[in-house]
Amino acid sequence: MSWDELRTSAEKAFSAGHFSVAEMQWFCALQEAEEFERTDRRLAYTIERFAEACWRIDRHVQAEALARRLVRLFEKSFGPDHLDTATVVYNLAIVCHAQKKYPEAETLYMRALGTRRNQLGDKHADTLSILENYANLLETLNRGAEAKHLRVVAKGLSVNHWKRSGVFPAFQEPDDSEFEVQGASLSEK
Image (cartoon, rainbow, N blue to C red; front, side):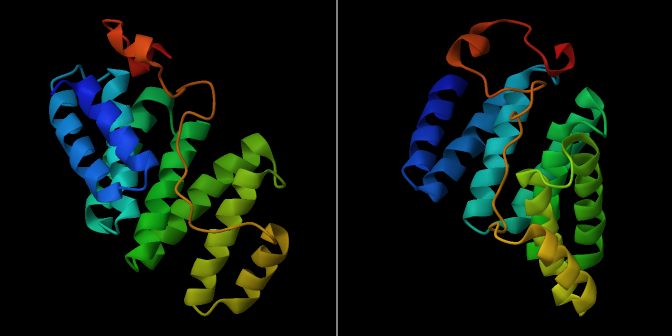
């Protein structure tokens, strides 16, 4: 199957809630995407969706490795302070948190939070979502007073939701025509 056929199949499976099937399809799609140029947007897209599928089926070790790769790719392409970079850093934080890698999760939450606060403000939903998850971590670490303060700020939002990059202008979820364009790259954005 071609990369596009695998992508379509994986997205259909994911939408239907068949995350294990989606994970297998994204794995195969990544094998195809590895042949693309390193700056080809399809590679980052595939890694991100594969990582999300792994997260959904609790394959946290694999999701972590993919998320780390994605962070490196986004930092190189967009810089460390880009909102999409903050999104993938946040996703890595929740994976580390789930694996009880608490010191690293805290560092990653704080990094993502700093970018969100600086660019979106304290009251933006994405900022508050990170605050809520960070508060959960602080509670786990018996730092209740800090957690309570953050919960007051982030009150009412849900937790541990995987976030997709591309919400901001640097990396939009591609439409089919973009995959047909030769030479489309992350570094062009």
